[in-house]
Length: 230
Length: 353
Image 1 (cartoon, each protein chain N blue to C red):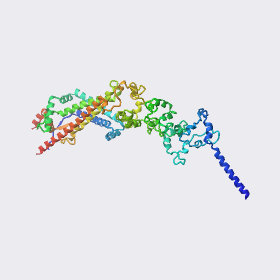
Image 2: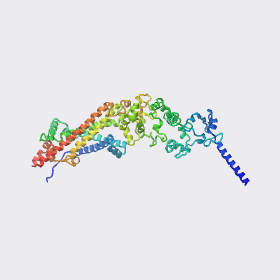
Image 3: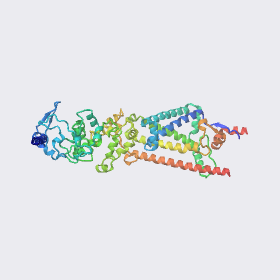
Image 4: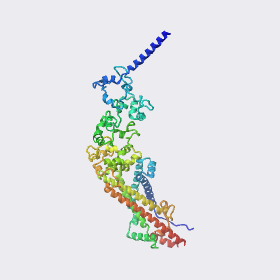
């Protein structure tokens, strides 16, 4: 069997960011949902395991601090590193993404046999990235308001705090749903990758896969190399 | 022989006399009445207190013990003048299996474990015994309005000792309802604190222990029948259980607010009453007890809100928006997964062909 050529798709810094994000998200979602569904067996189990409702809050805030740290880390990574900045430009939504997304939908529905022309980040990747950015931003802001409730209420009336709580609570559920049904489906349950894509550990993807899934990036970077090898 | 007979007869008379003498020693109620129907009859206790020894026999003869003689309870009142009588012990008759037919459902065990019973056992002379609450000479069935344990009279009965609390309770929304409006569904002391089994509020078994308060209040404030009849707001209990405070209490946190933290335990007033701890101007101070620096913004918006009910206003609409957003995201993603798997299956089959 031919040795697969592996390409580094994500750098170590990106993998570290992803890992920290993953840890904070899991803790936040588990402890958050435990509070939202405190009457269910899941909530009771989690809160008991954590050692009570006060300790639950401490876990949740600990993970929140981690998330805030990752957010700043990422922000500086985009602004101050060359590679990070280039990557950011690649993940910015562009008009052709809508065309590509439309093409993907047609392909999935069987209306067209052609794959969409996709660069390093496909429309769903971009959407998920921006969903994480927007979601985290909203959760951090609403979370801080709830954390520093008394101070926030020097400015905000009680009803605004109630809205904040509703938003924080539902937004958390939506993020959990998106991660479970979309992100985890793509990286774990997708038959091609089951049981798990190793990309989050080593950051590597095979050249074959890259060619199929990110044809534009393949053309841009590796077409010449591949031709020469032939 | 004759002498023997005489001796036997003499002994018989002697015994008869003795027996007669003994029965004559026990004074009848009539004899007690001679002195004790005098309203001015008083006694000075060793500690200097003066107490009345007057007994209103008219009321006594209507009481539940009307057929009993004074000496059945005051067993040491055998001589005249009867001095230094012991406190009456109700257990002389009221015990399980007694032959006098006295009710034996007496809750000595509950009382013995209660804060009052333990204080009595430790020798606290101020702690109440049976007669201090039930009355001594004027005991009636608790359904009788003359009874000290009649619901409407319980606050006064407890107030004999707990005067400060009675003073506050008397004017509270509960006290007014029970005493002025004669609403028997309104709570007296016993409804929240228990009767014979009263515990300190720091005892986890107490009905007013901080984790038990919401359960005790919920007996009425979540009782649909009472709610409809007296137009009590229904939501408080349910919304409290869903709030941070309620959830924390449920999981055993001891530093969070229960009902009485905000509404007070005895000085409970309606929210539109300026004396109330939850009157709009008092809310910052009330919240500030636990949230130092609470601003007047704490009062801007309802406290007990259920985001699922229209009364919650804007919070209801935000909540509904997110509810349907969540559901549609879920639905969209499930459809996506199904379509994606279907497509992958088709591609795989084509590849195999």
